Structure formats: structure tokens, C-alpha cells
Image 1 (cartoon, rainbow, N blue to C red):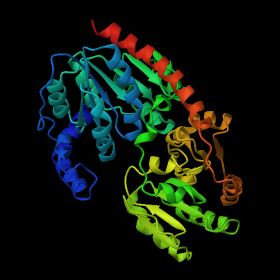
Image 2 (cartoon, helix red, strand yellow; image 1 turned 120 degrees about the vertical axis):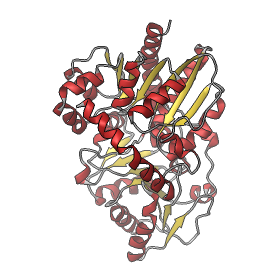
Image 3 (cartoon, one colour; image 1 turned 135 degrees about the vertical axis):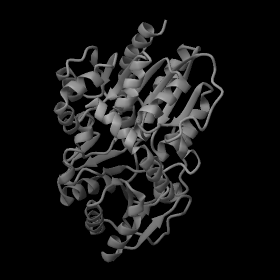
Image 4 (tube, rainbow, N blue to C red; image 1 turned 180 degrees about the horizontal axis):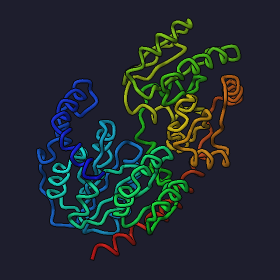
Length: 426
């Protein structure tokens, strides 16, 4: 099966050029650095003669989760440099900002998992150790690392039931791929059980390292700060197709209880902004699509955020947040968006019944009275109404609880990371 995968990815390589250029045209790739994914040697760098640790963290959440780890390793080991690869434009843009404070961290876009691309990439960078973050299981990368005898670890590992069933179809291949990892640090207990079924060694469950991600509130700027702080509003975040009407009808019900209520919607995919505006105006709601650095107009009832990186700007000032991708039954095995940023910015969080991807996190939050599951518009309206009676956001209590839990998770993770590096780097 591995041989077929390798042959398939080689055959696919020419078509990846077309695919990549198409994504560039629709602004889903970095307009300058997109070639890193297909020609990994096209942007060279003067590397230092030090040990290099490679972290691959695909998107924003995974990228944020490794920053505390790099902080810890940088302060304790002066002879280490770091390579961080990501896959999405949003994570790449964030990396430009977050990695400025380091003088020993390189960022590159992750090449497509084609054997000769991985071979070229690894030979160029020559990492001493590799960490794959979350669910980033790339067979050609893993096998190339094994070929060059580079120890590799899986950190904050997350394997869904759906993906594990697919791996079990090719159980021998799965055992060979996963068996390459020297250590697996799991983000949830379910993943630990799955990896145990593959007869892996050195499996550890410490909790989700994303709880340790850091947010510097001083760096959060919102041009509409004064307006929304003096407004009764709620925030619907990461809304997926099918949830727009749910949010708009919630607004209509809230209007019956509160004058001048404002609903702010952040679609998961901003290309859906026009569709949401159309639906909102069909319901006779005064609606505005808000682009970056634009001000909210005073007479609007529904505001649709139309730019990347908007969530923290509104989590900071929102008392109540509804997290999307949680009301769509057909997504029940892939549902849920991360509520961690919202919690760290002291929001009360509501979500629907379909949160499989973050089920364990939501269970923790529910016990701490940070989040609450709702099943319909009526339940959401009832809870939001209680919150909005006193729209002033209280500070500290929620975020302090999450940060304490995150620090414990980070401490446990760092012990395992340090042991891996000590045992492997001499």
C-alpha cells in the first residue's frame, strides 16, 4: 500500500502545479511564497551550524500551540534552531508576526507530500528531530525521515474515529507508518486508545496543548472598540453553511426583548459573506459586510466580518459567543470549532450538539461553567437574554481558569519533549 501511495503522489505531481496556481488565483495561497510547496529549494536561507528541530503545524490553531513549546526550548537550549512549516495562508501570515520575536526560528510552507519533494526538503534543512503536530500524518515525510534516521515524534496527536477506521483498512501500513514515531503525545484519551490498538510504544496522554497557547491582549486592536463596548451585542463565530439562518433567527427573537441588539457574524469562510447578507436582508434586517479597518455603521443590526484574523478582535469585547460548525447534523463526525481562544479572552461560550472535534475540550469547559450546549434557537435566545441583561463583560475568571489548566498541560508536555530530545540528541 505504501508503494502505491508513493507512486500515486509522483504521478500527481504535475497536476499539483495547476492546482497550486488555481489556489493562488483565488487568493488561497501566498502570492509570492506559494512556490515553496512545489519547489522547496526555491527560497534558500543561510542556516547556522546548530541542531535544528522541525515542527510541522498545518493551520493557525496548531501553529499557536507550538509557540509556548518553542519559547521553553529556546530559553533552555541556546544551541537549538527551529524550522516551523505551515500549510495555510492564514497561518503563514500569523507566523510573520509571531516569529519576529525569535532570532532562531525559520518559517516555510510545507511541501506537498511527494517522495522527491520530501527528500529534497529534508536533505536541504537536515533537521535533527521532527515533531508533527495534531493530525498531520504524511507517509512520504515519515518514511523519508526514517530513511535518514531522523527521530520523529507526534505531538498533541488527534485521530478521529473516522480517520482511524480508514487506517485500519490497511492495518499493516498503519503500524509501519505510526510505528516510526519514537513518542506520541496525545491531546485526548480517544487518540491514545486508537494508537494502543496499533500496538505502538511510548504513548502518552497529557491533554490538549492548545490550552497553553498565549494571547497578548495588548496587541489586539479593534477600530470598533468604542462602538461595541457601548452596544448590546453577541458574537457568532466560525459559522458554516447551514447555520446562517439559525443565527439570523436568533437575532430576530432577541429583538423582541432588546432594542438596538447587534449581532456580529464571522463566517468560517469569508467568501460566504455575500450569501449571509442576502439571507439577512431577505429577513428585513439592516445588514453590513465589514471589511478590515472599516467602521460599523450606527443603524445596522447584523454585521458580517469579511476579513481574516477577525476572531480575537471581537472575542476580546464579546461577553457571549456562539461557536459554529456545531448545529449541522451531517457534520456530526467532523463538527466543532475550537473554543479555546474565546475562553482565553473570557467569553461565555454556546455551541450546538455536534462538536466531535473538540468534544473533550467542551466537556472540560462545561464542568467549569465556561460553555453550554444548546439544541435550538429558543435555548440560545434564553441564555443570551440572561447574559445581555447586563452586557458589561466581566474580566479574568474564565481566562484564569483556562490558563491554569493550560500551564499544567504545557508542563507535562515539556517533560516528554525534553526526554525525547535528551534521549535522541547527544
